[in-house]
Amino acid sequence: DVKVTQSSRYLVKRTGEKVFLECVQDMDHENMFWYRQDPGLGLRLIYFSYDVKMKEKGDIPEGYSVSREKKERFSLILESASTNQTSMYLCASSSRDRHYNEQFFGPGTRLTVL
Amino acid sequence: GNSVTQMEGPVTLSEEAFLTINCTYTATGYPSLFWYVQYPGEGLQLLLKATKADDKGSNKGFEATYRKETTSFHLEKGSVQVSDSAVYFCALFNNAGNMLTFGGGTRLMVKP
Image (cartoon, rainbow over the protein chains, first blue to last red):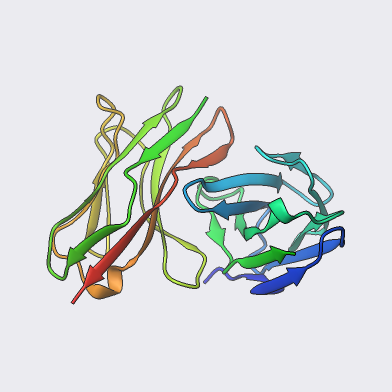
């Protein structure tokens, strides 16, 4: 089974702090994604990556950056956290060789910025 | 652009009731359509999918038919269980856009 893990289930940070959210997948997937989930808005794509060191902006990249130094790891970075970044963050991965569109999700990190 | 619209929840049903969660979409070309489910405290899991018009996706008693003429992909189950309580997301993948577009999610609560 595909396993996507995220470094924390719950995180509390203060405004202005630098925040790192880590995601690791164990199925050798080429594609990885970061979403945020907010009530009534569904999932919105922040960034995605097709390969190591590659990144593409999603729908709402402002205030975020990402890093993909290894194939299995995709990090989301909040350079200076703000209260409007309080949300649930979901990581996902998919294989380029299979149906590209079938994504496997991690359990999520609920981030609160005070 | 692409968009997905789902009925707003919460949807509250008694056990063994019939379930319908409506989903309509706007997309160019021929998207693939999905239903994902999120159980409390967990990430999203793929529930079912359909890749072309008139395809029916099914899993765990849930079904959805890709209706191109009405641009819909409604989720149905004949007899829900308490364990089906979760948030359900409709989504589409359009090769032109190269990413998934999600609806807002519908919370289902099933009472014994």
